Length: 470
Image 1 (cartoon, rainbow, N blue to C red):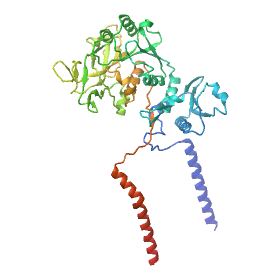
Image 2 (tube, rainbow, N blue to C red):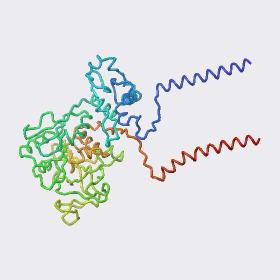
Image 3 (cartoon, helix red, strand yellow):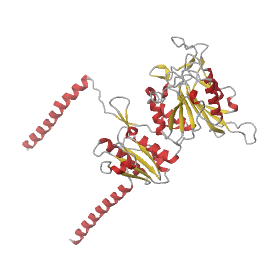
Image 4 (spheres, one colour):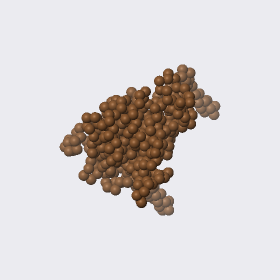
């Protein structure tokens, strides 16, 4: 009797010990399996890399509206940050119960998150977290994108200013370039528009200049200002669509930066987007700008693009590397007035470059000829320009296509030496829609209404008959 009792107590103690150990391990190691289609409850690899580099504590203050689905979604996300890094602390604040805290941090809206690191802080508004999707039934949850970028901004404190030139028919930051502006602001950059004709020169705080789809040529004074800016270490992102008229002044600026614009329209039947040979899917080339995109195997689409090449003699000052290329079957249609593109002897043969990255070569140590660039870019100095023969990819209607936004943001990050910054794709919240053919609907109706109940009834009657027979 004593032996059985002792065995029971040992068994009970063992079970209790296992439960305690499981709870301790569960508290220290948050292991979960996310089975959702879009990995809704998992942090991206980029965010985990950022959190692993934290050397100081970061506090997340979430001013949430209790009892709402949006608040729960934000809270669940922020808890993932605390699970991923012991240096991240989360504090939930009820702005109704603690209005003084909300006033202290200037919080005006529910579901605002404040990210604090030391004496620095950054506020993430709800419109940075939730955004309309690509269709009326979809909402994008950009919480991880916004919070991680806020942490990155506090880590680097770059605050670099990116100017978008205007006055030549380019896109507007308040219109078709608004989404690109939001992406760059999410990276921690300050984005402004600039009319160079009225300003007269580039501001001293211009970390980079973007020329997004000019329809008219630059004035000579603007050309002089841009040349001086680039010669003094400035950086340029130029997005130039194929146009029926030449832009000689702009072409001269780009040629001085190592890039020649071809006056053509690329036709690529082998890499056509949904059979549209004028909307090619370019082949990504090895470069820091495209490195992660190659790993993720994402596509870009360039509706109506022109081709580019390195300027003659550019190799003496610059390293010019291709970023996006066409297939070998592509050609550059030089007759832009033709009603239908047909390959002929005057056209440029493929493969063609859609985008080029330009870096200035480092001077030789002995003061002689500049060092030759190596494959890994070790001999190159500062980035100078990224030139793309397409501007439509930056506009609202095309920016959301797979890698278009990633490519442009990565280009700015590379130009400014901010390769460690990242682009996290937002997670879309959309209803699961099932499209049924008429025959499928009939089968489902009769299967659930007659077959399944009938099968259960038959099993029951069978069991009843068998027992009765016994």
